[in-house]
Amino acid sequence: MGPAFLINTKTFGGQHRPRVASDALGNAVVVWVSDLQEPGDGVYGQRYASSGAPLGTEFHVNTYVVDDQIDPAVSADTSGNFVVVWMSDGQDGWSWGVFGQRYANSGAPLGPEFRVNTQTAGIQDLPSIASDSSGNFVVVWQSQGGYQYSVFGQRYAGSGVPLGPEFRVSTYASAGGYLPDVASDASGNFVVVWLRPPEDIFGQRFANSGAPLGPEFLVNTVVLNATNFIPLPRVASGSSGNFVVVWERQDGSGLDVFGQRFASSGAPVGSEFRVNTYIPYAQGDSAVASDTSGNFVVVWVSYPQDGSSSGVFGQRYSQIVPVELMHFRVE
Image 1: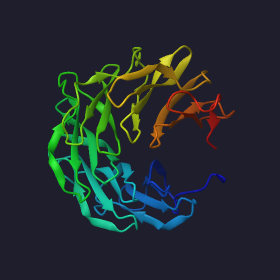
Image 2: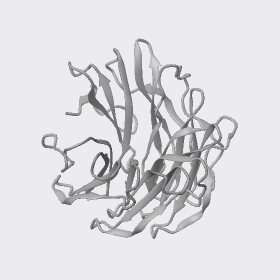
Image 3: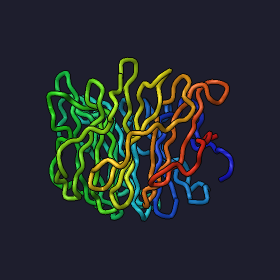
Image 4: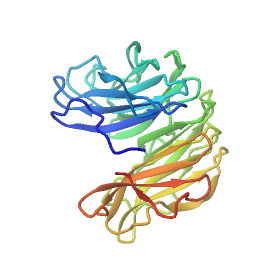
């Protein structure tokens, strides 16, 4: 739908770590980290209409500008209200902490920025966020206590009021957990996935009340053999609660992207599958998004498939099989 386009207005310094969310009408917001626009790194954003036209100008998300604010994530409800979360250095009085800012669909901030994590000792970082159709949202992050990470979360009403206390997601404490990702269905039921050392991906389903739905479950069927890379699990959910998880693992000549579909009950649908069909060298850094019906698209970085260095490729799927026989190049 038209050519590739530049999102950031300011071009000096580095602009990196982009994340995107859209509403039911296709309006979208993109957030990213910008270097050199404040004393440290900061989080910026740009809103777009469904036509692709910019809505307003590039805006600064974080109001606290001491040290660095990085690694943003964003989610939107069906009406276009959205929430941005990020990690901020030193703002919680200890080390890295997770902070957020709510916005109306007009782009106006709703209240001041807020701290997500209750526990401040240690490092709280790499947040992920998901919203339901009513604007309720949940934030998950990795929390370091001593020498080990665990995954924690916090639920919120659409008004920004916390729903219950901060909670532990990864219950098998002795194994730890990190690199979490979260997805929500339309009713607010949500699923969290994360990497459990040394080389497995686990998940946990939750009801919209915050109650766990069953125990933690293993996502990958084949051992990841993660000796020279760190698998990055990503999850997307349809409106009825069916979901898909994608990740990377070594297979044959190099690194490849794999996925597993699940029913809303948490039962696996089919077997683990390879996403990329081009398999030389390395394919990784995958991301996944789903529509309300559970059709989904996976994108990833492939080297050197575009004939030069790294390029971005994708594959569309219906709920059951790939929509296209061959994957596509994004740009």
